[in-house]
Image (cartoon, rainbow, N blue to C red):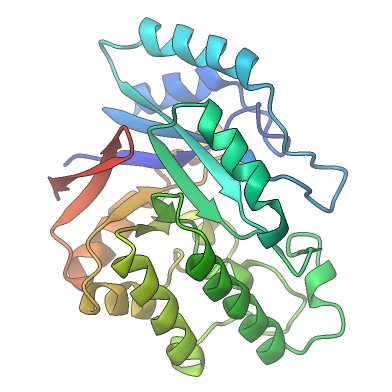
Length: 267
């Protein structure tokens, strides 16, 4: 079985303490042949505790050194996870024009300039309104921005929020979720299956199975698998289950990237 973890963070992300080399060595130890390092770049992130700004000149020195050091054991893809907000598009484009990333995840961690992680976004909103507004922001994102390869943890909203039940029912939001998926597919982009939901106690990856299945039904083909690991112990977390879900949803291949171009590998 070919496992490639396409969502891994390192200590260059302000919410991660794990050194880059530790992540790489762990991936090798568990038998991976390919990983994508996808550290955070979130311009104008509202929580000053997490600036999410990287010294990429320093980053690339470390990345290139380790890529060369371990080239006989693992392929290391230069990736990035950008945090989209509509008012920072120019900053994103200027940044991405400088660095030659092979793989770009676009994620939404902030909606209406309010942080989802620390709960600010949920203040004064009931669950239905919060979830709907999140998907409205994602829809605006994919309508207005396409310089990415896969959309990250597309139902990220149900990780957070102080609600008694965090369950997100696809059927409750099917029209807007379908609109999002159709635009992603029509734009030649993809989504990821992100296994971090298991670590957050959700009992499922992101997206959950009905959304994953619907993506396939609508013609989606590009899909990466990522652990969203911020610790070496979480690399490749629950990938057996994720691959089982993919096959059940109708996928026979996963996607890897070379210089922003998707390539498909049978599972």
